[in-house]
Amino acid sequence: MPDGITHTDPAGPAEDPTGLAGPSSGAASGPGAVRLTARRVAGRLRGWGGVAAMATVCALTASLTLLSLPHASPGAAQGPVTGPGVGVGVQVRAGSGESADECRRPEASLTPSSADGPAVAAIKQRGKLIVGVDQNSYRWGYRTPATTTVLPDGRKEASPGRLVGFDIDLARAIAKDILGDEDAIVFRTIPTNQRIAALESRKVDLVVRTMTINCKRIQQVSFSTAYFQVGQQILAPKDSEITGYDTSLSGKRVCTAEGSTAYEELEEKSFGAVYKDVGDGTKDDPDLLTVPNQLDCLARLQMGEVDAVLTDNALGAGQAAQDPAVELKGKPFTTEYYGVAAKLGDDDLVRRVNKVLVDYRQGPWQKAYETWLKADLPGISGPPAPTYK
Image 1 (cartoon, rainbow, N blue to C red):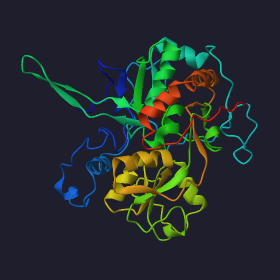
Image 2 (image 1 turned 90 degrees about the horizontal axis):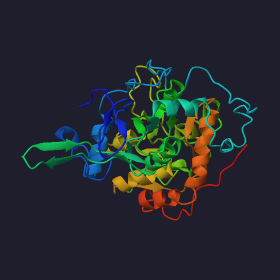
Image 3 (image 1 turned 120 degrees about the horizontal axis):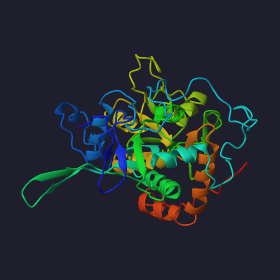
């Protein structure tokens, strides 16, 4: 039961699924992992798959909270994180000399280094790397189904599902490099709209959560070099008249995650789509068209409350793999890159992550891609080349 306490899985690292839980928390994201228990909701799904039902239940759960981690490191902020995922004010990356308007190469990062600085030293002193991840993005960061084992004496022992996926593998590799043990890690599940806030409040050391590097965000957090290339694309039912990110969206209800680059694209050009909730960002926000977690958009789509979802093709491909009734429409219309995010100013930690990525690109990246992504995102020959300042 959710209790706000960090639990240690005997088969793996410590996980904190309730520490920063969003509306979709506590459910496995693999196909067929969950069955609907609410007959009233199930009746509305009109034949969508078992995973679709899981997403629907996820979207109807409680609102977001941020709970402090027991035995946190000295000096770590323990107050609640507030706001829609962006910190108080806008800070410019130290030494960058670039404003958001002047930004040309947001994916350029600091040169790699294994030297310990204050951020890395604090992690070593604590003995655990705390990483903000997702538990709802199939193939990237998701929770496997819980299992029950019957012991020889007849007692039943329940084991919670574990976090797995492409981002989870990368997070473990960083923990192994810094602490010598890939299990010396605490996963804290965070919703899309709380990624930056979690870093700024030091609830987490890093965010490894399909986070796109862009000019706006490099003023708020520090990014590693890029580890994956993606592009924005429309996800809609296969039988929909929507053809992609074009005029077929006119008058259609399009769902995005709060604080996502997809929402920013619709702000720039919506093709007449309806994509803003009345009361967005306030206590009266219904979280219908803009939602805390990307998977909640799939739930809205399945329930017929929206007509399409705008997300990047990597996340969209995972959702299409979960539910055979939906598909990506048209072609990706942007070029974006995922990066590992750290608190602004934690330059030694960013350099250390970049050092990990140098080695990770030489083999582990390809292994993780083949394990988690190749089936749904075929044809990718390797990671993007790093760009340094």
